[in-house]
Image (cartoon, rainbow, N blue to C red; front, side, top):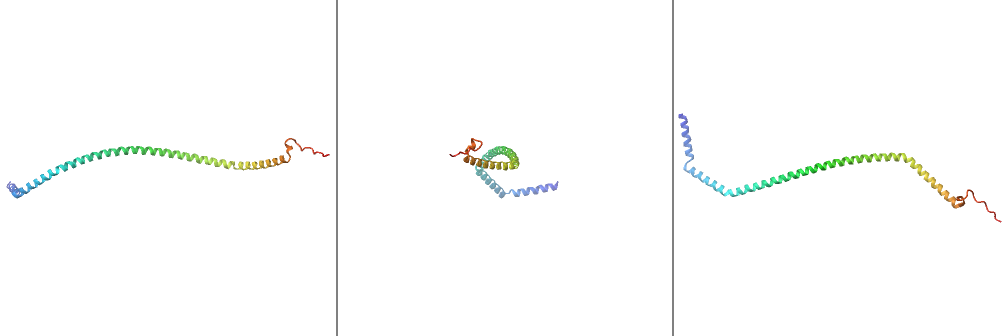
Length: 156
C-alpha cells in the first residue's frame, strides 16, 4: 500500500504542476476563444445545416423523379423491344413467303418458257397468215362472197 500512496502523491504533484496559474490562464483563454468561435460560427453553421437539409430534400425529390422516369423508360423500352421482336418475326415470315413465291414464279416461268416460245411462234404464223389473207382479199375480193373466181367475161 505504501507504494500506491507514493504513486498517488506523484500523480497529484504532476497534476498540480499542470494546473499551475499560467496553465490555468492559458486554458481559460483557449475556452474563451472556443466560445467566441462557436458563438460567431453558430449562425453560419445553422444556415449551412438548413441549406444542407434543403438540398437533401431536393435531392430526395430529384431521386424519386429519376426513379419514376427510369421505371417509365424501362416499361416503354420493354414494350419497344416486344414490338421490335414481333416486327422482326413478321418481317422474317414475309421474307420467307416472298422467297417461296419467287421460287414458285421461277418454276412457273421455267415450265412455261417453252409454251411461251411456242405461243410466240403461233402469233408469228397467225400474223403471216393474216397478211397473206389481207393481200388475197385486196387482189381477189370476190373470195369473200363466192367459192370460186367469177367466170371470165367474153368481150364481143
